[in-house]
Image (cartoon, rainbow, N blue to C red):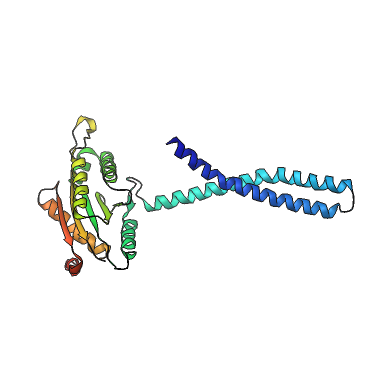
Length: 261
């Protein structure tokens, strides 16, 4: 961990040093050229003028360019942070719903020459979330959201996408996964949430989630995939909650999802 931080810090300072050296060198060169023109033909004074101009220019320019480069780095970091915050939910650090949907559509648009890529979309909803807010308060409702979000992110791969797509609803996109792997992820999330222990004020706060999932093999739009997964979520809730319902959309049956429109 420390080594990583050191490398990252070095990478941040390298542009500042490079910018400062280039700027200082340019200023010194201009000063030397001006001195050469000004003191031309004056013998020893000529060389003293050139050396003095170079030294003074370097001493003045170096800290100025270092300060400018440092401010530029801070501005770039601020812009990066603003961009990150505009893409993620501040409470759960999951992607905003619009960003989540756009990234999925981009994934499918960038499919190979065959125009097909399989993957899975999971929709996870916290069971009885309104009752949790009513009984334990919104502050604990926020804690539940953060806890479930953390469980979800700990259950997926680094390349998978996790978004908060509703108040108590999360979306998970698993690119290139099989049904077996998607079911394993869904069950890992469901089981881990059920095992979570929260005791606000000494009272037990039971947690569970329902999951609707769809495995696809073609170029369905995000809205179609979400509609199918959401239908499976409704089925899981109707069958008692704290369960997973799964559907497959094979490539030769693309029209199936549009029937729900």
